[in-house]
Every structure is written in structure tokens, then in C-alpha cells.
Image (cartoon, rainbow, N blue to C red):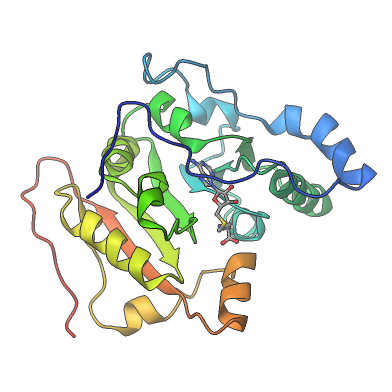
Length: 248
Ligand SMILES: C[S@@+](CC[C@H](N)C(=O)[O-])C[C@H]1O[C@@H](n2cnc3c(N)ncnc32)[C@H](O)[C@@H]1O
């Protein structure tokens, strides 16, 4: 399943894109500091260093995480649809963070917190069993074999996700890259902490009803690359493994 070294390689490309408009730069300077979730550096060696629920008001009933939110359309739509949920979004691409801030500002969303960086130190800093749902939508496929070690989905990342996800929490993955889909399935089906919820092909060919399209998804569809939607559950701790496979 690919070499996984003690210090994992970067999973993302650029951090900066084209020069931002002044309004977006202003949001980065003023709104981001109010919504940023601080992740202590070196948290990999000092796990469970933060209390994510404390970053939200007491009305929050669950915490969801989106890793690599891109321009934030899915995260903002989920936050608007679920005001009772605290959503954490991670994205190192500054222009994407600015786009999300613009959505938050326009609609007045109050239930999003942002880590404008790599999600992996955050995962290491989160307490066990704190997340009810995790989205990783259209992660960079890193198609060249020598780059497979950069893929977000890895044995190591799944172990970290299994630690921070609650019993029966949902992991939602999507990709338009067939080989990466096979990679995702290979890793998840081999993982005793997760099971695939699909029962029939429609379950991975069609988006769930509560799935706002992402920018990348729209581009891929326009280019003739349909998305695959892979939904898994974190197995209840202490219950024996039993991976259900969909009927062909
Ligand atoms: C292909 S884009 C998809 C963006 C968005 N999910 C969509 O569907 O439009 C993948 C995104 O994942 C982000 N990413 C990659 N590695 C990441 C990591 N370790 N932590 C957080 N975000 C990451 C990249 O910066 C990029 O914006």
C-alpha cells in the first residue's frame, strides 16, 4: 500500500494562487483570526492537545470535519443546513480559505471554524472519538506512482481518523479518479475500523441527497469524469469486523 515514512510527505500543491481582491485580503486579516482554530505546533508528539467543542457555542450537538474544502462551497452549505453542528474546515490553499470566508461573511454563518493549514497536525491534536462526520471530497489524486505517497488516504491517515471519529461516525469520500477510487477502497476495506455502507452500484454512482456539489466536482463532470461517492462508517469500538460489500 505504498511506503509510509515517519514524517509524511506533503499531500497538497500550492498554498497561494492569483493575487486576492482587497475585500478577500481584508477578510483574511479580520475574519480569519476570529474563526481560526489554533493547532499547537508539535501536536503530533502531544496528542489530544485541543478541545474543539470549546471553539463553538454550547448549542453545538456534534462536530464535523472537512479536509481540503477547496473554495468551501460544500462546507458552507452543510453549515447553513445544520446550524446545530460545529464544522471544522482544513485547507492550506489561502485563496480557497478567502473564498470560504467570503461565503461565511455573506450569509453570516456562525458554526464554522477554520484551520488554514494541513489537516494532519489537527488530527493528531484532536481528542479521541470527537467527530461525528468527516468529508474528504476530491482529494488530489497524485496519479504518478512516485507521488502515491502524497495521497491523503493512507493507512496512517485512516488510523488517525479512526481514533478521532465517534462510533458509527460517517466518513464521506469522493473522487473522479478511477484508480484513486480503487486505492481508497483497497485501503478502507482492509481497515478493520471502517465498513463500506454501499448496498448497490447506485450508492456510489449517485451523490447522497444532502450533498452540495463542489467546484472540483462540477469541473470534473464538465470534463466527462463522473464522480464516485464512497461512504464508510467507523465501526463501533469493541464490535467484531464484518465488511459488507455491495452487490455487483
Ligand atoms: C482537488 S482539490 C478539491 C477541493 C474541494 N474538496 C472540491 O471538491 O472542490 C483538493 C484540496 O485538498 C487540499 N488538501 C490537500 N492536502 C491537504 C491536507 N493535508 N490538509 C488539508 N487540505 C489538503 C488541497 O489544498 C486542495 O484544495
